[in-house]
Length: 177
Image (cartoon, rainbow, N blue to C red; front, top):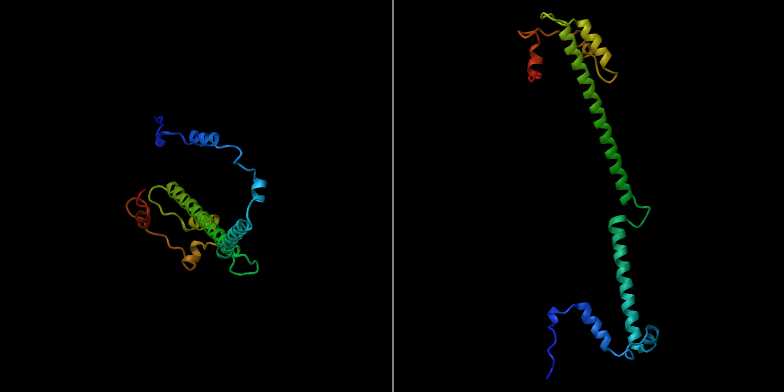
């Protein structure tokens, strides 16, 4: 009576491989150099053709990758490096613009704080004098920004104040204060 074997589904693959190696006679296993010598010329030719096909495939994939992505020729104007340099230059320009805008915003905040301080100094509903505003604008603005006198054509216009002691335009623009 045949012995019951453990079902293949529950058997460990490593144990199964070890069992098969133990059962195979060692005389059937031929070392690599001797097995190559025993190959027929037809088998050797098939191996060479397979190796050549694999090398051709790998070479074609490499060539496609270089021409499609990295441009294998160095003298091309449309190569990837040129595009990368142009993109980096655009990024630098954008960073410079953002830096300039940030500095302008800081100057405007500084100007606004100075004007608020002048308004707080001038209590009792008095208007800020034209000279004070002109000096303030001269101190804050650089050569890039026009002064208030330049904006209004040489004459500085002072807004009339409404009930709260602040000009109407400031109440509208700075509504959260």
